[in-house]
Image (cartoon, rainbow, N blue to C red):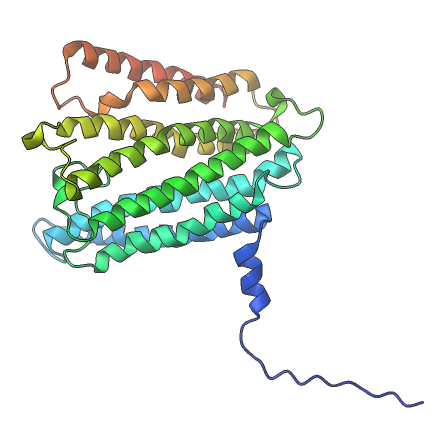
Length: 336
């Protein structure tokens, strides 16, 4: 008998379509965690370039490099890119990687929603960055989008609003997934109070995201209708109140601060016990402190607004609430 060698001459040197299909359709929590971390790194680089433009312009008094309008566009876009494109996806990526491993789950509870929540992000960031190349340039009213200044944005304005909506949808999908995973897929015997603090930080953060992202969506939608549909939510000439936007925005904006910092607290709560080689003091008090921070974050929003003419009683309340929210934060620091 003779052996016939089978020779396969493959002259296709292009990219393997299976590679793209794998990453496009993956529902594996580690794959999606890696994708979140990569897009976060990319957005950090983009935001970092914008920060360099800002700092280079401020290097000396006077105008050196860019026009004032472009400088304001850079400050606005830098903040939006860093918050929604840098920090939030980075922590979502960490949660995708670590949560199932920490609680003994095989994967996230809703893997297809996990995939969908990620792939919304590239489209949202494309819309956001594309505003820089539109007539009139990107939004220049600051990341807080205060009217009436932000309503002077050119044709890029609806793209900004649509991008914010997409980012909110992605965040809410991820938050639902985290809650479903933690509440339903914990290993047998792992009660909630036995969970690692990183898992607790993300459970609390997920509830914050679901609570406040629709508030931001409502605020920017009212801006959109003021601009294009003749409403007067924030237009004083039509009976509206520009300060109302500040109330609505900061009702989202202050919990957003803790959406960004609570996962970092969870990370620190693992790093310190690991390298000090001793268990974290007061596990239960750390959980209650994070829950208290999340609750109190809803009643301190107007400390961003002391210059708008709030009643004295309102100012005193928000001053007091701001002091109170430091207490659970101090509990965490002392436990560390």
